[in-house]
Image (cartoon, protein in one colour):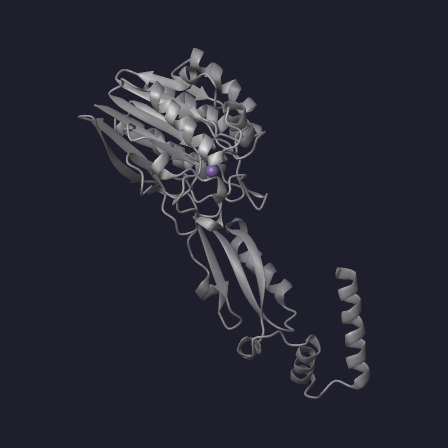
Length: 381
Ligand SMILES: [Mn+2]
C-alpha cells in the first residue's frame, strides 16, 4: 500500500488587488498539509504546480515555501513538485538542487528526454508534466501542423510508455482539461479553454492523474483513469468566494486508487456584501474577523455621500476590507429595460433636475448640459 497526498496551486506571493498578501492564508493551509502528512502516514506528497504566484517571487514567499519543504522533508516522506504556468522554469530550476539535500524532487519544465520526467518510488512511477507552455511544446514536437492540445495529448501518451511495468502509474501535470469547471482565477493565465486537452486523450493505464491549474477540487468525467484537480489551497480571489478547499488523499492498494478529498479550514473566507441605500451597516456587515470582504455599494443617482460611506466602511472594517465597488441605482432602470433601448442622457438629466429642484431645467441649463456632454464625449474618444 502506498499513500499519496495530492495538492496544487499554492500561489505563494499572491496579493489581492496588489495590496493584500495571502501568504498567511497559504501558511495556514500548509500547516494543515504537514499535519495531514503525519496523521495519514503519507509516503509521497505531490505538488501539481503554481507553487509561486509570480515568476520572480518576493523573499518572504520564497522563505515560506522553503520552510514548508524543509518541514515535509523532516517527516521523512518524498515530495515531488512540478512548475505551473505561474512559475518560471528557470526559477524552479534552482529548487532542483534540493534533491541533493533531501527527498525533494523538482521537475522544472517538460523535457524531450522522457526518462528524466519520471520519479520512481518502489512499485510506483510518477510521470511529471510541468506546465507545457506553447514554446516548450512546439520545441518537443516534430509535428508542427497539429494543435497545441493534440501535441500535449501525444506527449502524455509518450509519458505513459515510460511508466510501463510499474504496479502504480501516476501522471502529475499542470494543464487545462476539457470539461473542467473553472473558477475564473485561471483565466488570467495564458491558458484559454481553446488549449484544453481532451479527457479521452489521457491514457487508461494511469492509476491516478494528479492535476494542477484549475482551482476547484473535482474529478474529470469522460476520462478512463481517475483524473482529479485537487484545487487551490485557499480562496485565491473573489471568483472563488464560497468555495470549499481540499487536498486529495490517494490510497494505492490492490492495483487501484482510492481517493479521499480532505477539506481544509480557511484562515480567511472571502465574501461579497451588497449594500443598498436603505440597509443599516451594522446589520449587513459580518461580525466575524476571519474574512476578507468585497463591498458593492449601491448609490442613488445624485447621492454625493459615497466618499463618506466608503470612509465609514474603511474605519469599520479595517484590514477586512479588500475592495469597495460603487453601483449606481437608477430608478428608471426598470422602464429603460422594458423599452429595450438606452434613454438620452438629457432625459435622465431632466428627471434628476425635476426630482432635486422640483422644477424643469431652463433652456440655458439644458444647453449647458448638452455642451458639457459633447465635450466629455469628445475627450473620451
Ligand atoms: Mn493556479
